[in-house]
Image 1 (cartoon, one colour):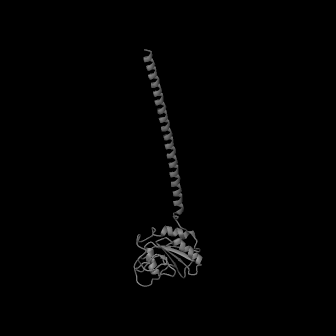
Image 2: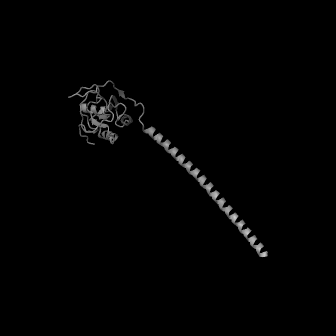
Image 3: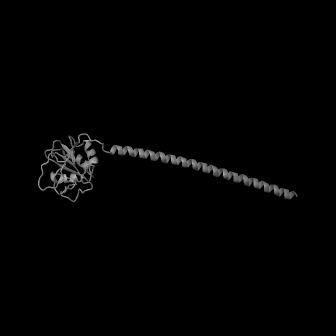
Length: 215
């Protein structure tokens, strides 16, 4: 009997130890779960804050890069003819911003010599911006203009004798005259009007026409 009682007591002790061990494991498991849950919420919070910060920064950057709704000094011309004509055309603006033009457009790019009005106007119809400058403009200012138009597919840069100001930038029905090659409105004009809403033939090509730009 004594041996049997001793065996029972040992079994009960082992059972108590087993239950204690199970409770300890369960407590550790719950503690790990709570830690993982807290970490998950903490990580999600960090990701959310980072995403919100990124979206705000991108919105601010886009707002800074976007051209203004109104660019000071831009003059608008309406009721411009779009028919193709042979030979030279006399235009009321210098340089022209639209009107009758040659049936072949001018290839967009940078030119070191004056280009024909009639071909350039056709490019304006395709959504090109035409940036012109007096041939007497200092070379450093010409380099500024070259850097400004570099990388734009729908911009023409060329010297133009007889301009009313040192630099004039034009699109179909639109023109801005400035005194300096570093005027920030030039970049705004390109951003807004190269293939912009004024384009009579959006999506039309500015290559495959006439002219060989240097760049």
